[in-house]
Length: 315
Image 1 (cartoon, rainbow, N blue to C red):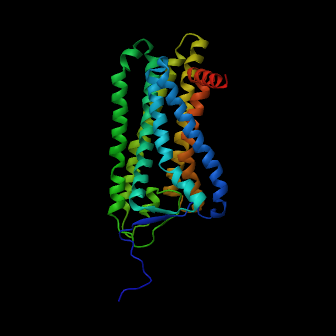
Image 2: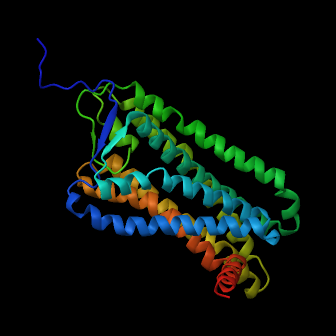
């Protein structure tokens, strides 16, 4: 005889998002900074795309990679923020299973893509500083396009197993996710099966994606620093440091919360659920918001174009 109080979630049609567990009463207040940051993400990254598109002098590899970064940040934040805001404002907690799989794919895929773009930007800085006379012949437009395509394909290939693994597990416990969006680790924990394959692949993806990229970036900057310290004058060294400043700040803004979020999810079982949710949202909100601010303030060409744009509007 079947138990009438038992619900079968083997093939759930929807999941229920809790938002920030334990802070449900503060959802409306939490939506204010989230909405402000999302507006900054949209305006900042769209401004960078517009400036680079309409300014021929910026049609160089550095700004092409910056445009790739802007598009990635827009997709990364838009894949989760609208649903999170609807949850905060309208208590819209349900999310279809297919939409949940899409969120998992886009979050992980574009996180890997963004990490790969930072490696490409590190390569650009390495060539510009260590081989300045050959920069235009090494990083031609076709080469930049191939790098962008390789970064995209790597992100898709590394992330594609996630939704397939999530779909294959049976769900017989609950369909409630203690988060504002469908994070892979929180979804597979709901499965009533051995999820060691998902956990192992998640660690593999982390090491082959962000982990390997961190190594390549560190090697690039080791060579860059060695070349900078060999420059003859202090002014030339400061100028070389200045060309890398924006990139280093953007890297720190992306990797520090990213690694912190990944390791707390895997090894911070004793931490409160609201802490995991808040850290996960910081990772998805703060880097896309900071990148256009960092490049807008520290990159002279973009800063000048922004000032000119606002001056024309006032006139």
